[in-house]
Image 1 (cartoon, rainbow, N blue to C red):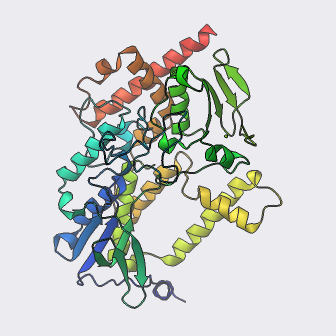
Image 2 (image 1 turned 30 degrees about the vertical axis):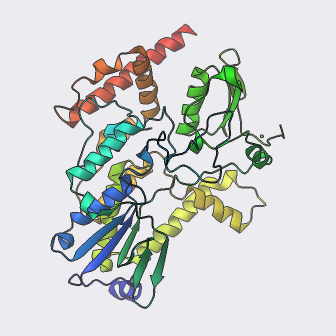
Image 3 (image 1 turned 45 degrees about the vertical axis):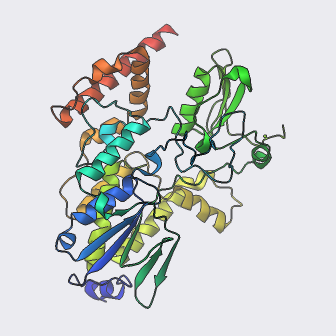
Length: 434
């Protein structure tokens, strides 16, 4: 079979390559990814010619997604958030905004911002949630996105019609037929708990909670004085720092942690908990190019070679299977293996995310490639964060920031490299004192 015949036999079902037929594109979610998708649609020649009509449904009253922090002092926002030692008043209903008071971005903003709109000059390198929310609101206003967004319209049901080859998208007040559906509602709305024996008992007794409900530690003199924090991700690191600063004894459990006590046993590092005894992103440039790749495939499905895509999927599966081989039990079933691979399918090794971005750019014939300094600074992100936190605590951060960005992107690059040098020097001095 010739390549052209093979491609024709693997056409994407239900998608027409007729560019002259008006089409409706529905986007779900006005968080960072949804805004990028909407902007990508509006930038297409089809949309500018009136052939594509985008509609974005957002369940909340404004843009921002999880970065939007409502005023919880208002009557319509009851005190459902965690104030240890009290349990959440609504443990089965996660808060729409799972952000704690000390949360900052886990990447320097020059790495994570949209490619077509930087953060304002002098923005803290690791900004807090209100700064990110203001940035997202500015993005929506700057590019005129709001007229295409239907706020307070949660999507209640989505079905696909084989007959019409369209998606039926329902909200409580409106139903739309869509030719293309872009689901951009994120993955931070449902808490994930470790599957450890005994954890459900702790949760049922109000002695444990997910960080989605956490906002800040209470005064340790009023209740518990020891807290167990599980997880090595950004929130686990942040909560450990919060509770230590508040005077708690912290037991921090992570998969590969050594068994050690630090700071006069006020910080106890422990490996993964085996049992609870009864007593308890993309950086935004990535989502921008992903949206453009989706739209190219929608406009010109003949350019998407499903045979090649299928081979790449199989290669990815085998790669992850090999990577996980050492962590899988020899008695693991095919279902267990598939589940383990599913969990890490979209997790990239440090540079894979940038290789993927470059691959997508090539796919849409965009000559742009990830700047070398993005890769350089991503590899130093932990050092950058430690250094920045130290500068904020010492009161030096404002001086480092003053005016940075007014002359262009290169000023942010110079600042980040300066922070790396500062951090390396500081940590070298700390090691010399040991």
